[in-house]
Image (cartoon, rainbow, N blue to C red; front, side):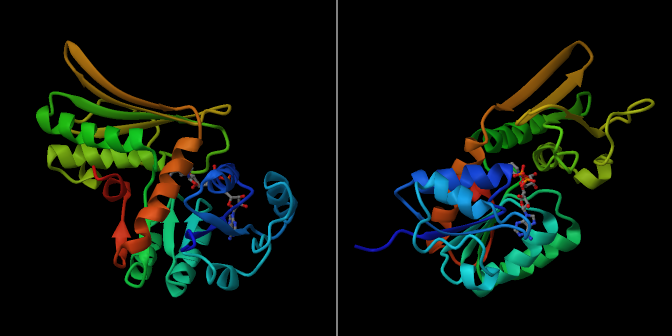
Length: 269
Ligand code: NAD
């Protein structure tokens, strides 16, 4: 019998990391072969052991990334931009599929990730859920159907520990709206802004970010004209949706040629 793909989870004690560990352990399509965390989080070893009902053979929870990645067919990475750029190079060296969920990546980070994708499969998406990727497609369609009598606003809400704003998903939705309209997002939006002061410029795409409590992730795309509004909405209530998508991406990538892919490729949207 051929072995199922071995998966390494980085950032294993994070909100997404813990969810991913549970998802990999529950799946019969892959195996957990390693978990990495920053130093100072060494309790993760105990934690993974507890989740599995005892420390599993072959699961290294404290090891060196080069050594741990060498055992992996895929690395699932929801950490921080600095960590993800480093992991991209190491996963490419190991020829492991690198699934990147980390958001807040700079242009320089994206360039480094793209360079790594010359040697291995990278699947990167600001949101790994089926629902949000469908929402992105719908946003593009609606924006293409409407002229700029309709203002477009992307409104997102997340828990109070989220570092980046607007969210990676909000930016994906803004990009989709701009693409539908046939313009570049950078030309019609100052995406760092939270809310608007003063009159709105025609054709502008705005972003608003709300942070509070334990909100998993909520996104509205508002198309507002004089006399009518359309609202497209996605509400995430469980991080399992992101983990499910990430696992699907890790398995999908196994027989693909090196390159950078996104969830639209994985989901065939
Ligand atoms: P978190 O802070 O709970 O977890 C991040 C973990 O990464 C932490 O445990 C941290 O110690 C660890 N980490 C940081 N640097 C590391 C390194 N060098 N080596 C090993 N581990 C390291 O954050 P989170 O809520 O789990 O989110 C993580 C990232 O995923 C964020 O960028 C978030 O926006 C993104 N995210 C993406 C999606 C998606 O679908 N694409 C969904 C949810 C969250």
